[in-house]
Length: 441
Image: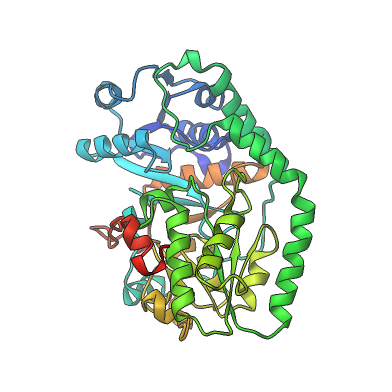
């Protein structure tokens, strides 16, 4: 036990961990919390969960999803659970758990990839995006950020693609080949793991060529002088897209954005659509984008790239449009105008462009400098911490910091929590709204 992790008189609590990243992070957090005098339990829903919880306190749930609510209610009462920790509160099992926790007066903490990437993680009370309690009023944010330090933007921890891939295989392959051990488990992902891996192998085989094409396109856009906008795609499996946006699929977002661009962007403007770097290539996004652009008569003004440096691409652009990707937050840090179409913790008046999308193309509004500085200071101090999921040093640092915040019960503090949550979950658009009659053949 390190000197700054000594036990203090705070009453012991019982932390229940559900699914976390395919990483040793949650186990390390539990180790620190136990050293501080708390009890840590885990419910494993599949073989991968069990592999990544190599410690005491593990319980295997092998029943059906229909029986999950009753099992969880009984578990919470039996073990007097006080706190719930999970990755992504919108997964089906986690939605049920969060509702049960709120009903029982239990604190809920959500861990996710950081808003301030690359080597930050998110820790929020109750949830993210539509569920986030982070302030949405610029005046309140400026007041709360007064006196807080500028974040240290130097990168501290690095993780490799190989490490992430190895952990992913270690988690998912047992779930495929040992699925009989947890017969009632229901995956939250859209694609079967083996199909995803096949897609990744295909993508890796052509990645060098695609990278060269993307780099050349970025250089061309940056030097030819014509105005251009950037639209970074999100993963089809991303719950920020699935649960916190008006779209049920990235295809619907593509339809809406390209249609608006065709009708309202200046004739000389171009749009660069960038495939997510972790996309599995199972959906032909470049063809979907190209076909849609061609149908709208803007095929020569829309380019789709699979690779390249997004920061460099955004740096010379007129602005970025996103559903709710953290890529938008990175563009805001560069001082670029950003239009958000879904619910995002960073969609704040004065920070992001609040105009309708149709007007964004002709008069994009950059972030106010004072508001921007305050948002980043408050985020870093209250809902962000340093570390990552897939390196030894990054998980060690993150686990210690998360355990300390949970132990002190100061997540979202100081000043990063307002109640009720200030954002609403967007209403899903209909297919006709995504593709109006004038644009359908």
